[in-house]
Length: 128
Image (cartoon, rainbow, N blue to C red; front, side, top):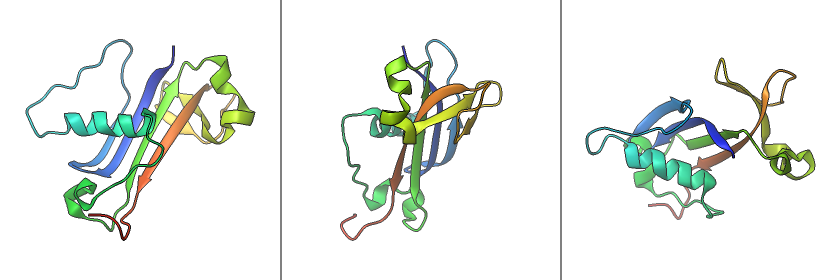
């Protein structure tokens, strides 16, 4: 079963910058209200959910600064062989080093083959 290896979020709602390497097993997001727990879950949904096109409003930009783009990337490892198919998913396949947490553009010999989904958000004339 695939497993989330790394989540990176920049300039999305209340999160200016987050890099998280979830541990094995169950991970819990715990904290007071309005600290970003739901934002992290929404970011994951934007990458893995069924929506093909993400619509961002001005309120989705960190501190309403629409000049800095939103970037969300989610890297998944322990892939089934079907997801490692370079002809189908080649542009999304990366190398993941579990020791360092580094995601490489090209899978290296000693790295795990992982799949990275990236969502970008920029201000459009239809935003906000």
